[in-house]
Length: 90
Image 1 (cartoon, one colour):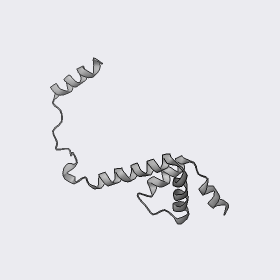
Image 2 (cartoon, rainbow, N blue to C red):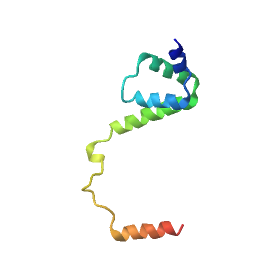
Image 3 (cartoon, rainbow, N blue to C red):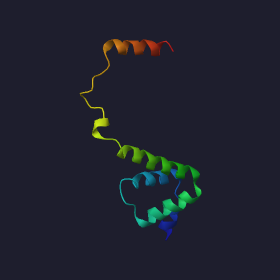
Image 4 (cartoon, one colour):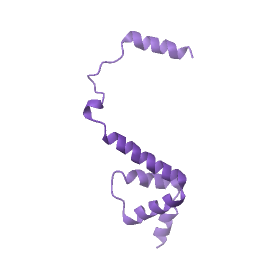
C-alpha cells in the first residue's frame, strides 16, 4: 500500500517518463492508474501526452521512401561555403 501511495505521489518528471514508456510497452496496472490520475489534474503532462501521441502518429505515417539515406547527394562544397559565410555574417 505504501508503495502504491509513493507511485501516486511522483513528480511530473517521473510521470513523463512513464508516459513515454507507455508508447513502447504495456505499463503495469498500478503505473497506468497513477499516470491516469496524474493526468486528471496536471495540464502540462496532459499536453506532453498529446504531443507524444501526435509525434508517434506522424512517425507511423513516414515510409521508407521518405527517409533520407546515404545515397542522397550531399551539398556541394560551394553551397557549404556560401552557407558558412552567410552564418558568420550574422
